[in-house]
Image: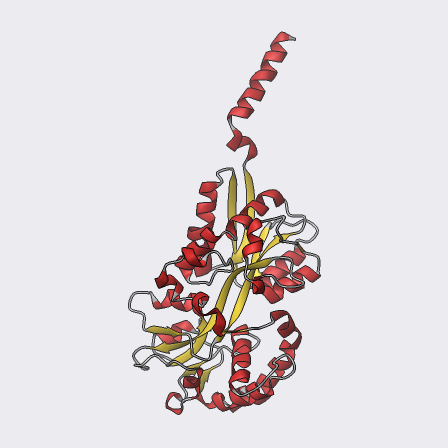
Length: 349
């Protein structure tokens, strides 16, 4: 009996002396692959694991939100993903299907400091990054950086414009911007003015489906002008020898929101909440803005970002952003796509 007791005590003592071996948890994070994964790993995931040595984060990179949703649906009975970063409109669909838990102040005190448009009615998660549409130009072909979206309609660039068409949300965002420029009022009721204006743009468009993305053909001079997301454009513009120029036009732009979500019945839910809290903190948000120029969703992050990085995001131009209700847009996206196919794309050369 004494020997058994001593052995039992020794086993307990050994377990207590090796907490990392006994208690390490793994959080599986699904988010965008490519340059987003590269920068998010360095700016967020690796510092998190250093600060929380008992939690390992596995990054599962996926190309788009639609594929993420399909994976969630397939795993509904036995989830293998704990945290997912995805587009807000797709996150709404996942929430409606009961795939996400609620992220609120009980999960992270940082939720209270998020900008109002980072908390979306009917979406389980909250905004973790803001991105915005920008005007792209090739610096050799466009010597003076354009200051207005109207540059896309300039006849001197006929056949030299690259625009990702709907259903890509870049095309959807441009529709809402064009609608406002043409005097349209509530885009949720009608984008007729925007569709007409885009019809006038069509003859200038070289391609509605830039390959491999919209940034490459403009950077290498195949196209002179185009539209794209700010964060990726800023990164590509920094590449050695790049000729990609990026501007936020004076008419403003619209935010695209990526949300961070907790998967319902996930295997590492407690550790996942710890990661979500970290990702929403002002320090982490500021670090990712410095790394990839996404605008932060935490209002307290702005003071922690350098003036140089801030100037390359929309964080310093919040008043120029068009308020886009992406949940409402999801309900009219098919109608917008139909109008593009009938009245915009056929008018290109």
